Amino acid sequence: MSLDPRLVTAAEYPDWLRAVGTGFLRASAAVPGEEEVAVRLAHTDLARVQGVFDAGRCVATFRSFAQELTVVGGAKVRADAVTAVTVTPTHRRRGLLSRMMATDLAAAKERGDVVASLIAAEYPIYGRYGFGPAAWATEWEIDVPRAGLDPRARIPSEADGGRIELVDGADVRKLGPELHTRLAARQHGVVSRDERWWQRSTGVDLPAYETWTEPFYAVYRSADGETDGLIAYRADDRWGDGKQPLNKATVVGMTAVTPAAERALWQFVCSIDWITTVRTGYRAPDDLVPLLLPDPRAARVVTYADWLWLRVLDVPRALEARTYATGAALVLDVRDPAGLAGGRFLLEVSPSGASCVPTTRDADLSLDVGELGTLYLGDESALRLAALGRIEEHRAGAAAEADTVFRAPRRAWCPDVF
Figure (cartoon, rainbow, N blue to C red):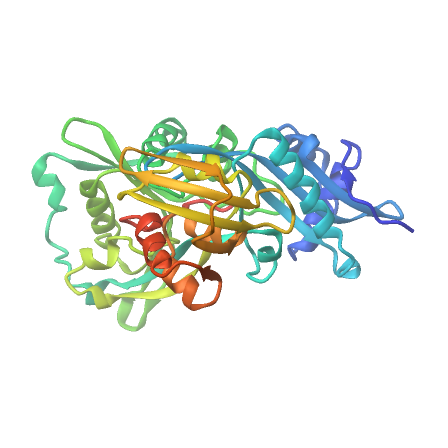
C-alpha cells in the first residue's frame, strides 16, 4: 500500500494527536477527548498539518505555523516554524519525513517565508534537510550557600528605587506580551509568541497529558514603575538531617530587558529563604548569571546543547535583513540540494546596510545552506567551520573575513521550545 503524506482533516485530527503522543513517548498516547481536541483544533491551521495514514491509522505527523524571528540588529523575518514531527517506530526508514519536509518547505518558500525554524529533539536528523544549529542553550545549577551572596543584603537595585513584586498568572498574561516584545527588539534568536503561548505557559487550556503545578511569578519594576523583568519559578520541599533546608528553585522562564532587572531577578531567586540550589532553566550561553555571583564557580553548567535550528529559504532577504558591524564584500556559493535557496551571491555589507544579489563572479567561499543557517545569527565562527571542512575557502583570508562579517557581539538566544 502506498504511504503518501497529505493534509489532515478535522475528523482525522484526534488520531493525528494520538500519533504525536506515540512519537514523543508520552505516558498516555490514547486518542484525546473531545474537549481537548476542540481546544487544540481552534488554534491549529489544518492547511499546515500533514499526516501519513496506514490502514486508517496515523503513522507520521508534521505541522508548521507562522512565526517571526529576530535577527542580528533587531529586525524580524518571517519564519516557517516546524513542530510535532514524528514517525511511528513501525514505519521508520520509508522516507515519510523527507516527503513531509519537502512539501512543507516548498510551501514556505512559495509563501515568502525567509527561513524555517525548529527545535531539534535529535541532532543528526535535520542537517540533511538544510537546517543548521543557529543558537545554543545553557543551563546552570547554582549552589546558593557557596555563591557568596549576603543573605542579609538588600537587592542592589532597590537602592535605585527598583522593586520586586510577586504577581499571578493573570498579571503575567497582561504584562508578559509587552515585555517579550521589548526583548524581541534587542535579542537575536527570539521568536514570536501568540496569545495561546501565554495561556498555556500560565496553565490555561492545557492538554490532558500535561500536568500543571502553578509556579511563583515575580516582576521587577524600575524606579519609574516600568516592568523590566519577569521570572517564573517552582520550588520543591526537601529537608535534610537536623531540619536543614535543601530546597531547589527551578526557573521555568525569565525575561529581563535591562541589566538592572536581570541582576535583581537572579539575586532575588538566590536569596529566597530555604532555597539552597537554583536551576536557571535554559539561558543564552553568555548569560550574565554566573558572573553576577561573588563566586562564579558556584554555578556549574549542567546542560550545553544546540537549541534553535534554521534553514534559509531566501538568501538575499535573509542576509539583507540583519545588520553588520563592518564593511566587506564576499561572494558566497550556497549549495542547496533541495533547490530552494542555492546559488552564487555577492554580499556587500557595511554598518549602514547590506546588499545581497545573484552574481557570476568567482566564489570566495562555498558552503551548504545548513552552514549558512549556522552562521546566520552570528553565533558560530566561519573559521571553525572552515577548519572542520564545512566551508571551502577559494580566496585566502575569505573565511577570516566572513568570521568578522557574521559574528555578533552577544550570542544568539531563543527562550522558547516549539
